[in-house]
Amino acid sequence: MLLRRSGEKSNREFHLEGITALDDQTAGDGTGPTNSVGVENEQILLEIADAVYTSEPSQLKEARRKGAGLLGEQALVDAIGVAAGFNGITKIANATGIPLDESTESQTIDMREMTQIDDYAEASKSRLWD
Image (cartoon, rainbow, N blue to C red; front, side):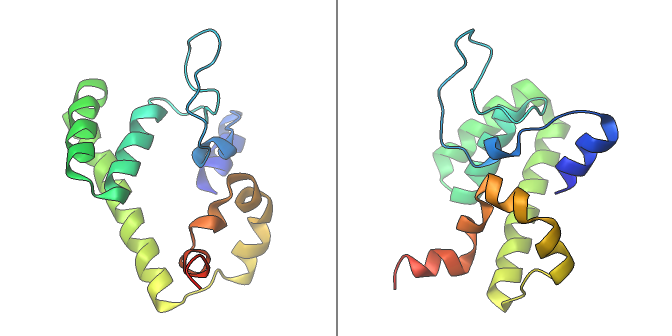
């Protein structure tokens, strides 16, 4: 939601559906993924977030190696910290059963549908195994 608001304030358009897109194809001109969100260095940032989420050691090591080269050491540490923080905060909220407040829920309907982010909710995951 903050990325969408930032785009409105800075007159930039972000394609939020690319956040959860599974399409790894690159654009025909070779400029990057067809599901680009429009954020600088987004490919490595997505790789870092995915590595933090999966906690797979070889994936984390590769993301750190690539991230250090592309972002620099401090930005890499910041990116890993943000990814880890959001991962932890979400798990705590989900574990306690805290629902979205009415205002946030109503304001984010379109964004949640576009990104399919509700598919990542713990309740959604548990339904897979019922």
